[in-house]
Length: 134
Image 1 (cartoon, rainbow, N blue to C red):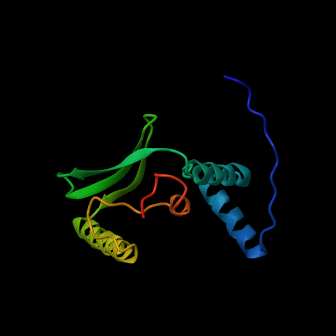
Image 2 (cartoon, rainbow, N blue to C red):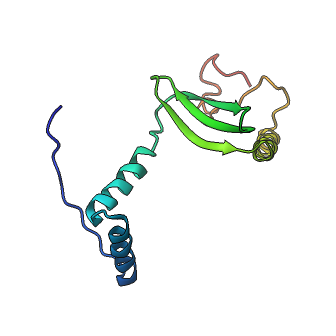
Image 3 (cartoon, one colour):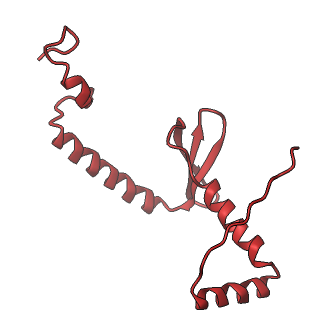
């Protein structure tokens, strides 16, 4: 394993936040730099690149009567988006998503279930060949 290179990062904090940080670290027995580093690593690990393909997977746990929402990426990695979701939460989310998609379809004037939105760039090709009929 290659040796890690380290850099120092600083931040100005209000005095009350700095005091709270020091008290928390003393209580938990960690030093402030390792605590802040762990927070940054956790936050950055949660960032998902926008150019990754994958599929949503919602799994039911019958023993706990709840669901987990997972993204399974095409490269084999998985990321749990949320755990212990109640059936009521998913039903509410499903209704909200359906309403939003219906509003979008209405805005796009979509009449057929199998039609899709046409990118604006293709619409500008009108009259430049047989690619777009109109």
